[in-house]
Image (cartoon, rainbow, N blue to C red; front, side, top):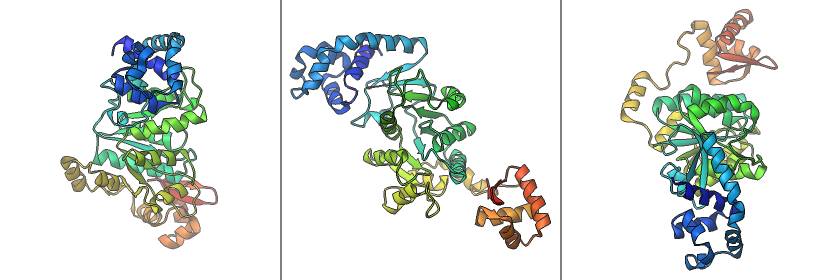
Length: 375
């Protein structure tokens, strides 16, 4: 992409940050950002109904050029790609959306136009149930469809859980940010973000020195939704950012799915409502998702069927351990007094075996003597 076009796009972004539909119409009519800047004095010859506010911005475009030049220098210095709307590396799915940004700042290695892209979103207050869903989903997805780009927002909760599990499974994963690439919010996710740059990437529409304001998180959601084939909501309260992403996905004609949760659980209400109102397909596993999307490859499907995709999760368990795991698979999060009845094991043996299972990372103890199956 030539520098003239990049600078023109940077400048247009600065003057029309909140008027994406209007600038997009102008961009498509003129054919490029450079053409808009060059013809700004008689732009109504190209688009007669240009708004007065946009005309005013175009008249003053020289005032924002120094900022555009500074941003370009920063990106060149730190290896950040500037992807304009007509750049072949720009996410083609996002380009189809009317409110797509004129440009994106990108630092990473992943192809943003991979054959299969899914976003995984949810609450910042992810429960152990939600963490297990994310882990199981990505593990299963890797078996059914090994080449998928995982997208999320690098926020607390479901987002960071999705990124980290994607990295562990060898997937590339992209985080869409609500600020510029000169900063990272939240700061504690820096280590994961650094790993993602080498195994995925970080993506934003925002210039450097942009704060992570609330409105930017809402705007960020349209990029997450628009660049993906499908949206998977793991956990959500009755109101939350992930529900905005789900709505945008439907608006963009993307497939939308949600995991159900316990009735009355505060961070499952949003997902349950999406399913109840037919706004998202119900899934309980990666297999459900892959079959709904038609992503199963013949070779992968055959291998998965031969191995048994619902394979025994704990092949190294002895008979007593397997009995406890089976009881927790039927109903998770049980107290020891219930487990002793349902496994028909004496308390002493049950306690000792639960300790061994905890050491193996199969179960975890919670307050009140509740045992939770992790796998």
